[in-house]
Length: 257
Ligand SMILES: [Zn+2]
Ligand SMILES: [Zn+2]
Image (tube, rainbow, N blue to C red; front, top):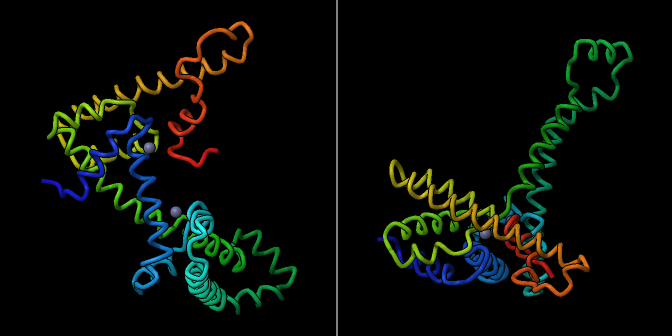
């Protein structure tokens, strides 16, 4: 039996009538993690080590700041994260400083012969290495990695419940998922089930997803038709909020005004 701490929130989320129940789950987790970062995590040295190393992505820095929950706490997190990143940058530079300085005094002849030999200069190699490590930092985020871990548990539980509980299977067959969570379910099917079960699940999932993508695309199409005076008196149907729903279907939950 899968742990109840995972099965209960999953079942609750699937009771929502929405474009993606996994977005409901992830949004709730994200809010909890942001509050955790600005509160209890500050007392945990292990957590500070993680935030020093990973920092946050743009989305989560924005949420941490806009939450206006704990300015001092956020300041402390940023202070030590910056110290660690500056130290890393300085060390990387100091390792190559001599070589770069030497290159600064390179003669014209040497410059040309390096170019002909297609030899990467030290400054060029240094810039590439540094850019690569900055790209890694850009992609790393203490909140995203916690989210990824727990969402993976939830995906596992979702697939488990789909096979085990008839009631859950009915809840599952609602409006499909956003593309991001559709992808996670496909990856989960490869990771957590095999053989006949995998084929059965993927077949059900793709049919559910396709019919719901077509449904929402038609709702958006109707939304655009309503701008034509000839359709002035035609009923809106479900299309009034088709725009935000279709964006969330494509991109996952967002902070649309
Ligand atoms: Zn989603
Ligand atoms: Zn993030």
